[in-house]
Image (cartoon, rainbow, N blue to C red; front, side):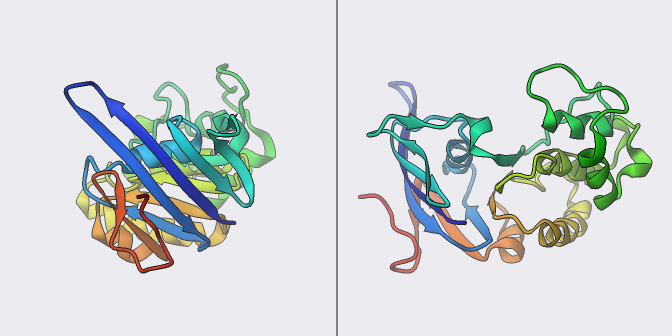
Length: 231
């Protein structure tokens, strides 16, 4: 499944403006958008997810047009069928692990029951070795367990692709390499396309089958024919 992206977005005020103008196409299973803070990585990922509406352009996934400003197409986030892993994991502190995962199946804002979720939730509790902590809340978990819980929530709906926002930045340095290794193995298991954003070169080295270098809102330093910058 490929992403074909050509978008522009201006954010900020008259005093301070940031212009995102990115164009890229990727057909590999793992794509890493790499760059420093403030480069526009999160804006790009949010646009793919449908959490941010570009000012103009086009987003296509697997041949399906998700956003096209000229045609008036803007598929809402839920309709895009992507799983999104937030930088801080965005787990609900009042819900246990099982409920947090089951929330990914919810159509509204009602909290799942303590033992809710059914077969889909049980699958990911087992796959990610979370069954023993299923009744615990996020504050009682290790950093790696919180990440696996958030990833299970992103996967419970069988998404067409995963969008990962700085997935290791919330971890202590001592945990990062171990958790990278764990995530690498988990992604091999699920086999869905992944777009990850990061500022860490170690993330890029492990996960970047295709690397997009983003600076000041633009893709730079890519081989001719692979990634193109908007004029």
